[in-house]
Image (cartoon, rainbow, N blue to C red):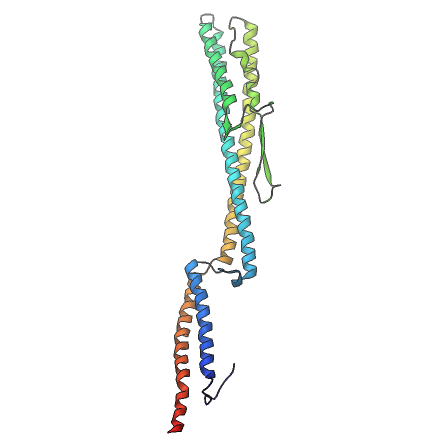
Length: 278
């Protein structure tokens, strides 16, 4: 730092030094005040170039994980929709099986029971045909084979969970009970066989859905934990410690006041040499 004995008044070195120090303090004060105003430690890449890069990479990962978390939620909602439909179908199958058992009574009104069974079969078929999630059919899939799809549940496209279950199989042969002749023992035997197969298929699909929901619950917990940890790490880089920033601003306020006082004194110092001309 340049110094002067003060006798050269054309260039007031002491005043310039005080001005530069005051300007530096004011700049630092502006940085810390901006951090307090925004709540961010890094408001410009120049504040911390490497920290900015790392924080943005973390932000990207967190947001991708957030999208994956939404995917898990959609997958669970879709499975829950299929689960509800299959549970209803299973209940209707039980009712149909009960009706068939009631038909094995010589005094029963077989025509009325047959009509009830036909209505149950039609309702099951309707549920299979109409169950969908956001326009995607879940049980009645074109070509059979059941529903199958993959959901991204991680940072990369390769991190997926395959969601597949055969809900279409529950409808196999159920059309045979919509016009069943309860006076024929062989027809009843065939129809009850259809119901037993449909019940087994529904239970198999429900078991598959239950296992998938359990797996998705674990994925959801892991993603929530990962997002929280990433956000915490990003916060340590990007967010301002407001208590420390306020301490620094207070210190700089004092230094600024002292700088103004010293600049005033430095500007008035050359005047003492006017005494030499009296």
